[in-house]
Length: 320
Image (cartoon, rainbow, N blue to C red):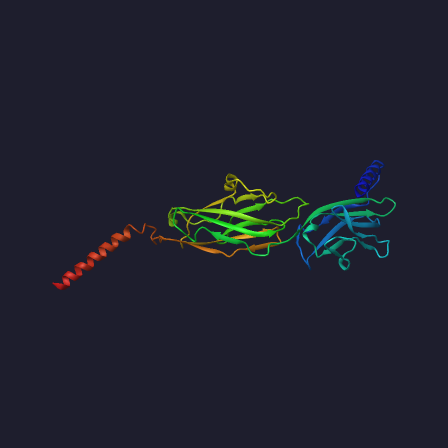
């Protein structure tokens, strides 16, 4: 019924343009938050702006997935009308001809929202705009981080796993080395009709270079952030070769202190971010650099030998 109505509006517009008419409804735009948190007390404000060019407003109608849930008709008393929106309610105290406020949303109300504006007689010009909204169910706990070991030697490969509890939609996972982002696993978004919660998982391998840090310098940033895409839609067992391709890899020059920390962060759009407990990682046998920039096993050894010889000579002279 709604689709047939919109087709009739389009036909009317075409005939009106062919007749040389001038539109009275212009610059229709919609503002919908990309994501909001679910739960009691959470809300989303949807706004619709337009220019009627001095024409009167006939109605404002809001739809969610082709189903009308709010209507504003200024000629009627009262001007507002609310239709059932399962899992949420409309706050009439903050809804009018420009916006509608929805409260207590759940994730099944994710989808496209449309605003339809109609000018009054005699032309009844009508236009509609839509935008997506995702209602987020975040994980209950912080990400869990595990390491193959919490120490390293030059040339080692450290392996780390980060897992996140089920959420909607599945979170992305970003790896943090000290305060620097070094890699990211991005979860594929599921279809609009699939509201199932899913967890997230990411695997990282860090290769420790053998080069001396005082010659190489220290850098944590990559030229391009490593990314892997995690498919959370299907529940099959992944093949080993495919799983290996999803391992993120990073090469690290050991820092002068011989220690760094690793953590992972779970994010969903820009409304949820939670970090795991950072794990400190230390070098097994650190090799301190010489302040002169020379190899500590070279000149320092010869200087020590000279010092020992001088002391021996002094003892012999004293005994004589």
